[in-house]
Amino acid sequence: MEATGKMMDDELRLVVMGIILAAGVLAISQTTVGQFQFEPFSTISILGSNMTLDNYPQNVTVNQTNRLYIYLDNQEGHLSYYEVRMKLGNSSTATGPDSPSQAEQIGTISAIVPSGNHTLIPVDFRIDATATNAKLIFELWVIDSNGPHYSGKWNQLWINAT
Image 1 (tube, rainbow, N blue to C red):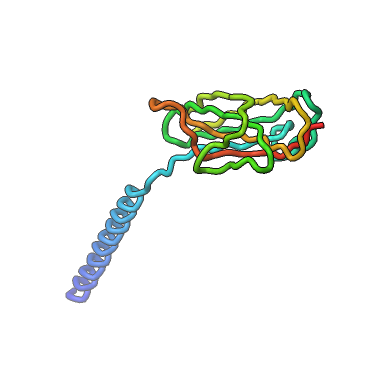
Image 2 (image 1 turned 90 degrees about the vertical axis):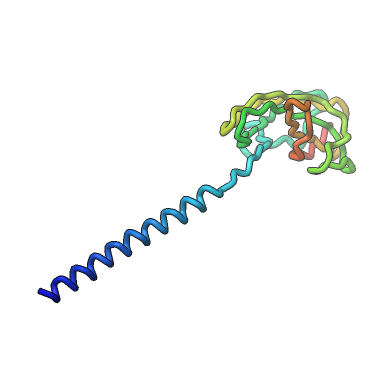
């Protein structure tokens, strides 16, 4: 009888130890998950005339209307008001995340995108003079209570116009 009692005590200890271990794992996982920080971001992409990442115009006719699509993705955690500034430069036109391009602005596209959503916007453009290696730039600007500010995100296409 004494052996049976000791065996039950050992089993009870194992069960209690298992419960303590499970509670510890659960507590640690909750602490780790609770410290996860969401990194908000926005995305801009240029899509070709067939709404995919190809079929971009490389050679266009002067004053001909050409269609592209702008894809905007909002993962900021709040509703965002975006402005895409379309600019036309050349091979020496600087583009980068630190400051907007000084190229001539040829168009503006505005969109309001809810958090966790994206939108696809058709964009028509024309180049009004012949050009070799023209740089068609799409800059993402955010408009908030402080006014418009450059997000540091941009895309570009190289185009020849004849």
